[in-house]
Length: 375
Ligand SMILES: Cc1ncc(COP(=O)(O)O)c(C=O)c1O
Image (cartoon, rainbow, N blue to C red; front, side, top):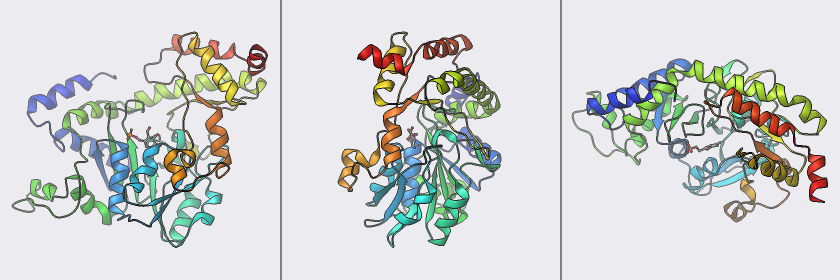
């Protein structure tokens, strides 16, 4: 917590307007719109819900294809599969682990409707190239920006490139309200319908603005909006964005500086952030030489009570992915990094002393020693 969360939550409860779209939700909307320069921001109950809204707004139907990196969270694909689309999984670049834009065009067919770049770890995808290809083939672009709030690509905020972008405020993210998200609508023609779909398919928002004298069912939709109590918690976090980002920058740079020589000496990869990308400082990961080395380092850290985690399992090789035709070898980079990637502890309240202990413990580890220890 950064300080004002509980006061704002108490305020939201005291006002007696704790349902969605009350005072704090509006404050979050305006802050996101002004900071990012997007036409409309809508808080949602999760990034998953925002992705589902994007699929509804694009009228995705059975038979449509949506291009998605295999190296991402389940929801990036599921939101479109729920509408009957076939996910077409493509591989990621070996440096940033973002959708490999050089492979995009050859995955486009007459059925392709959208492409979903994921800004992995809050480092921007190659948006110039992706947008150019998408525009040439009349495809919608939905940025899954779950990790990347306030990151930039060539000076422009992530989340402002696609027709839509989706944000996550899950507890694991830089800014959180436990569970939460947002849909950013950049293509203004979708704003009115987004408002309706988010409010159970009703024109309730127009009613609240006094534009209609009663509200009714006008379209499909669902309940995608969070309680104002959650928005109150989130608003305190968003207000403290500079402080939060400064803390995370310091944590990221400490890992990078303290582990660089150890990583080089042990053939271990560290995150790549291209010059033209300002990252969001969402995570710090290591790329170990092999799956066995990763397991050995997880065990080594666990012995000191340090929790390290890995992700993502390649979506094309999951049970669902295989039902859509995924096979071993389809996305070799994803299959490789998914075995070797390890995330180090990274949260806003990580103290310098605790981080130093993580660094010292990591530096005691050597893949070569782990092999001889298990041989
Ligand atoms: C890339 C990506 N997209 C979407 C999500 C889903 O976010 P949420 O938990 O807010 O639904 C996640 C979750 O971590 C994610 O990593």
